[in-house]
Image (tube, rainbow, N blue to C red; front, top):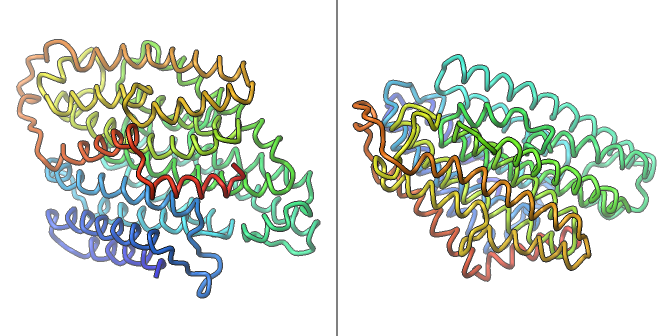
Length: 476
């Protein structure tokens, strides 16, 4: 039963909290992640449902795609965390491992949720879990980043709650019943009160857009991603943002069914271009390579919003880009974490010659840069090209032109920082030269790289089916 995707990680979290061994807990996380991924793939392949037991829990097309993606990203990070936590033996990992598993349970709950309130609860629980992960380093900078993350997140989740209430009121006026079941809202879309539905969508877009990191709601990202361990950054950029995007897509589906599709898509295009522009501005001359990745995440959240806003075939492309972005972020954040540990710094004044000191991590960081900026033959090249093609086919010439300009500026800005990190001679730092690339801290990145290459040259039929089903659900 698919409810096990929630219960098993919660039970494992309890076990991890009770187990006294610091070395055993990371393996509990990794084994649970492997079991969750295997169960998720089996459930999705068999098309299991839970509607007879609890109608508010069901794996729709969006949930299937999102759950598979989040589960794979978590597994990659869980395996990496075994080697990472062994390296950070000076830090107790009881809370870290427990909260990782709670994160997995809550993201699974969000993907299964077919009730807007239940989805809101899952999103809030995921936010609280990641806040504890952000504070793992327990220093002043990580504390400041955690508080900023919580404050901006609190504003976002409060606005999302208000939007939820407005949507319920829209249903009450139109249907006489304040339902928040997605299936009922979509079915009765034309009867919903249009003014209240518009207001609800704006509030929910702001609320869940803050979780995604869409500009101008992105202010928590540079500090959070900059101070978080690399494994946490990968979970945020590949897992948390995917959950927020799925939540936003479900709200968009209701708005579209209620005749507000053009209004919603216009807002998404505006925020998408604004996010790309913001990322382009702050990437130029960026001296902190982990903050650089934060702005890269802002850019790609903008691309996702832009794809949905363009509509038609671009919806499929945006869903494909969700997959590609999450996988490449796994490469970038985990390799950046290794580089940070080896050089004891995130500033490019202190970090040079990463490919010489860390041949594998440095090379993967460079490859990740090429992939995330849309170079062939990697997956993002395909999805970004499809979004551009959809904009041109729809005669959205200004959008297409701005899209290309922002991509070019971002490539140049990001490239200057990444090349400064990986090229040159490493500094003569005795502590840094002691860092070694163990298989557990490198192999997960190669797994992500293999998947990203596969998505660029051949998308397996089961993945295509998942993407098409989710795109059809959104009206593509």
